[in-house]
Structures are given as structure tokens and as C-alpha cells.
Length: 568
Image 1 (tube, rainbow, N blue to C red):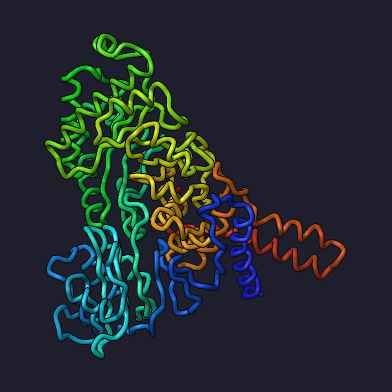
Image 2 (spheres, rainbow, N blue to C red):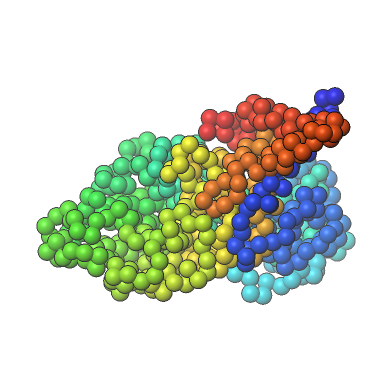
């Protein structure tokens, strides 16, 4: 009896997907056919129905099965190019050992299959395996091929730019199962050059341990930008002039070290507008000193935020004398500070990523006096952040992006306020990322999703946002949502059932979807079956199974994310 109930509970939990598919609203250009849960998901450019083709996330641009899997066995040979990314190589070693390789040679001839990581040897092996050429692969792109080269089982990985090889290893991790590497050929690249998340909510900032865990999550999901912009951190707000306490500085150093290893660029946002004389050279120098201090801690990209600045209230007489009053005056003042900071970064830290500015009018539509003045005065090196049309918009279209770009006349950083929940603190938003045109990903200088105060729970929607940003044209929100739950469950079937119930019951948000939609068909079936005892019993069993999963969820949710999810 228990076995039967357990199977039924699993089936009901999986039915969450059906509820979501019936209620999730997706921008037309991003819509994909619902994936069959029993069929592997592959890239949009090359699709195959072969059962041997594994699921890889973010969804590759091209992945196809080209031969049988390669058995790794008890020994293998890892050949890494001398200049190969050391973090990619180290992760490749760990993957092979985790797959059962007890003896790992690192020079030829060695023994067992050969795994080539970068360099001319990998390129030659890819050519021998008839993998598509590099051609126009952008930075961050990579190729993988698996098969036989000169009679020896071979896995070859090649990447472009600083991140490509690391991305290849993240895919290799998903190609290994049961001691074998799937016989596939992959040609893949990021659809959005800069993609990631912001810790920008108002509320209790994440702990150091939570941030470190989040950075590791970002690495395996191929995200490359983390912007620290905690809404209640005084050292980036009213007390921006002051250095962080020693403990916090140590936290930033540890975070930067982890980010470097996971190929994530660590960013820091400062919001000085409520406590700064913007016409004062002395205050500008104080700001550049704070930037230098953060650079020393490992920060490599910066954002100036002016979202709460008044058009008529200055914090010194010099500002009123210099800029006047009104939207145009505020724009000129903000542009002055941004320009000074951009020049400082170029002179002192030429390796820094471009500075961005979150303007006062970050969500409005079209040109305004403020936006026009800011566009005219802002340094050409500076990017402009926006959230779409609306603070938390249901949709962001390519047309809206084009309109904002025309108004600001600078590259745009899309700071998407999903799944952030600081405006609804009694809610968590666990539905997939929807309603964004592919053009928003490809047309943004960066695409960052603002996380919830609950970091581990945030991984479900953030996983789907990362999938969209990597391959916006091939994005399937329902399949991505399933994969996000699998990732957070970490292979624990009980945790997966509980997460399906939790996420299904928390799917509704401004983006769309109906809360607990998967339960409605079960209710309907029950009420419509009262005249038929057999149907009524089956319907009652379905409801009972669904609520049994929910009842057991608190205990089952103690496992994911090293137990942090339960506290959240």
C-alpha cells in the first residue's frame, strides 16, 4: 500500500508542471513547445530524439549525439594545455575522480581514455572527431567532442576567451553519468555576454556563507556577474565614505577569491546621492578613494545608483549654485560624478569592467527632460541601468529596450526585478523567468536578475533566468523550471517532490502564473466524481497524494542547499 501511494504521490508532484504550463505567460518570441519529461532536452540549433542524448543546462546552442558513450573506467589520462585555465583543469580532475577514475595520468601515453583540455591537442582531436570549426564563436564559447581518435577513446574540450574552457567543463559535468561520457558533439556560446544576478533587495543582507554558495551556483550555471547592492548596507549608502569593518573586508576578499575561481566578476554598487555634494571635488575624491578600497578587496565592476535622488533638494549650497534645480540639473550633477569616476577607473584600474549608472528615472518609458539631459552629459564609457518599463514589469519587449536605448543613447544594463520579493515579504516567487523577449538578452550590455532575500529558494527562478540569458531563442520555461528543481534537489528524489510542491504552490507573481494551479484539476476531478464511487476513490487518492507530499515537505526540504532552505 505504501509503495502504491508513493508512486501516486510522485505522479501528482510531477503534475505541478501541467499546472504551470497551463498558466505561465511567455513572450511570443521566447515560447517553445513544452518538453516531454521523458525526453532529453537539447539545444535549439540541433535537436535529436536519441535517448542517449543528455540534458545540459543552460541549454546549449547545439548539442547532438554522434556516437556511443565513452567508458571512463578506473584510469584515464588528462592532458591540459600549459596555458589552460587552472580552475577549469582542476574541476575536470575532480569530475573524473568523482566518476570513478582511480588512476589519473596527466601525460601521454598514460592509460585509459584521453581527456584533452585546451590547446592544439584538443583542436586536433576535435578536427579528427569532425566537430564544427571555431569559425565565429564569440568569447565564452566552447566546443566538445567525444569519440575515438586513432583508436583511442577521446574527450576533447576547447574554449574561447577567458571563460570558454571553464564553460566547457560545466557542460562536461553534465555529460558524465554512470562512469561514462555521452557520445556527443557540442558547439555552444553565451547569447548574452554579461549575465548574472544582483543582491539588491531591501532587508537582511545575505551572510558570507550564503554568498559563497551562490557564487558556486553561478559558476555551474555559467553566470558571470554578481552585483552586490544590498538595500540596507549603510557602507554603500549614507556611510559610503567609511571603510567597511575588518570582518566585512575579509568577507569581500573571500567572495572575490571564490568569484575568480568560478569565473564570476564581482561588482559593487554605491548610492551616495543622499549624502554627497556632487559639485565638490573633495567629495568626488572621497568616492574614488572608496572605489580604490573596494578594488583592493577584489571588486572589478562598479555601479553608481541615483534612484532616490531628489530633483530639488541638494545636500550643499554649492550644488544649487552649480547645477540649479529640476530634472536637468539632477542629470548634470549625476553625469559629473559618473564621468569623474569613469575617468578614475580608466586611469587607475584599466582592467575594470565598464561603469554603469542606475539613474533616477530607471523605469519610465521614452525620452524625458531628465533622460535627455543625462544622455547628453554622460561620459561615453558609462552604461545605463534600467529595469524595463515599470519597477517590476510583467513583460520586457525588444521594442521597449530599443526605446530606452534611444532615450539614454548608451549601452543598457537590464536590472530585472524578478524574483525579488522585498515589496511582498510574505511571498516567495518560484515560478520560471517569463515575459522577456530574446532581444532583451541579446540587446543588453548585461542582464541581471535581482534575487530574493532567500538565496537558496532564489536559485529556482535564477536558474531559469540564467538559462534564458545563455540561449534566449531556445529557452523553454517549463523544461528549465524542472531542471532548476532537479539542480536544487541535488539528486534527492524526496527533496525533488517537496520542491515541486513548494514551487508549484509559489508559482504566481507579477510575471504571471496562478498560485497552486496544479491542484485545481484535482479538485475538479473530485467534485465531478461524486456520483461514481470508483471515480470518486481515484480522485480522492489523487488529492490525498498531493496533500501528503505537502505534509511531508518540511522534513524533506531539510536536505537541499546544505539545509539552508528550511531556515529560509
